[in-house]
Length: 244
Image 1 (spheres, rainbow, N blue to C red):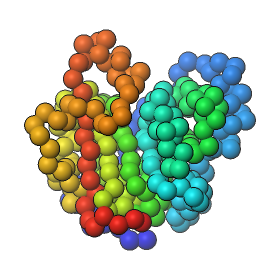
Image 2 (image 1 turned 90 degrees about the horizontal axis):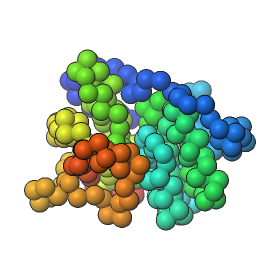
Image 3 (image 1 turned 90 degrees about the vertical axis):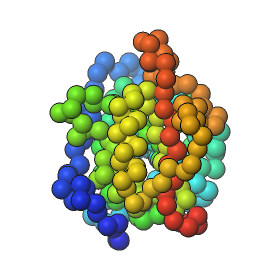
């Protein structure tokens, strides 16, 4: 399996888990039942060694393959899956409460095109083949605002190396945050990385939500708390626009 040329930073830094705790409030009965019955049918299990077969994750007939890292309440992922039944999705989330909410949405909406990965998303990226997905969403990730915690931010040269390897040329990485410092952090990393580019866009257009966007529960909470400005970036994987 080929790997991209590592930058100086990624060669020195090791990946650190981008999350702290993985559980919060106790699951209610309905969610606990789904954990025991539905989750085993949808859960992604990593191979003991080597790459994972993308068709096991996204389905053999999927016309596109999309990953969302940290889907939170699951509103965005469930809506995309419902609107795009011919696209295969993998949702990555470690928090039990969020997984429970996602399972409820999958069951209630009878979604057949979502698989779930319940460990550190970086581990999944590492075992996917080159050019095997069409895009990746990272929406409102934990900003880890304290300087000593910045190493836990999901956006790093290390994760971008893996994303650049698995996203096909011409594919996308979409990132949203309401934290300006994290927006600047992400832009700085993207502009330094040889695998991605930020297509030209009018000044201020990065405050306009993605096409078809519906505000998530987290975004609504941010507005109530006075964080009224978000950043929505679409970065493109460099290279010829050919399917994997």
